Length: 419
Image (cartoon, rainbow, N blue to C red; front, top):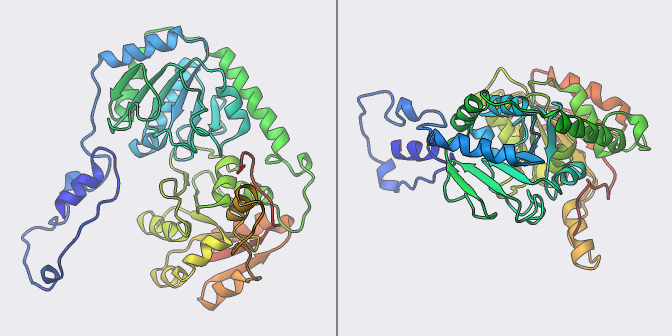
């Protein structure tokens, strides 16, 4: 068991499967200490951080100085390392903008003037637009999956890249690199900042360009104000739901998304206002049903914080029985269910890939608010966008788990989704 904790918290943090034979569980044993399951050193992650050689920082700085339009690309490794403060500090010092993957959301506050937001197939079009002609990429803690990179077109192949990662297997796996750096993200960025302070930087041009792109996106996407998009009040468009969530939630509240379009709506349009882990999604296996139990676990770990689970009706239906768990364990969280009566991601895939032959994607009308009440939780069904913000605010202050069922139209899909 101790070895499992050691593996889970060192290197690239992650889950560990521990197979224990039944006869072992049936035996009795005595242990002399209180930490027989886990040594204090491995009770949290990241443990045993790896630091690159000092010379590596100067190699990166030299490459950045030669670049005309560099970018910092941050993945989930930045968040796992707790390196968001260092990313923001380095970006401000150099004036180099920051693009992220979904798992990297929060590497820099997305309201920061140097934040490009999420990139890739499911990222913001304006982010991909900016990345189209960058001439150098400093990649930190990113796997460069096909989705994160729009099938390895963002950034373009052939652009000079230096990749920093705690897992050497990931370096150069999906993109050729001109230099590899095996290091914990936080420690390397600390060294990079120290070295960069001895050099002059002029990032005013990039700062203005990024700011203009973000203003353009806010003005045209409809995320900033209802007047900028011709959406109806009823049913609630998912974009209106994202706006209500951002207005109702505080900067320290965390949004935990499920798999499906809900994650894309949240990834593109829910801006993380502070650096750090304030957005979570199942970006590995894309597990449906993830959001609600993940929110329960997060609440158990951090009872002083507030968590909102965002799921579609299909994903929530897979694990809605965890309402009993949440009530029994006294873990008050908010569950926002975007109910469009179907599996819209699958439906769009069937339209695009199967010639419109629809199979097993449409549901009967289910009232999730009533189901929540049957479990002893609070439930509210919202059909009008004007009501949603206040409902979410009230739910965030409730002493029990609240299911906010948001009735949304079919066929609404985020930018960038194409099959």
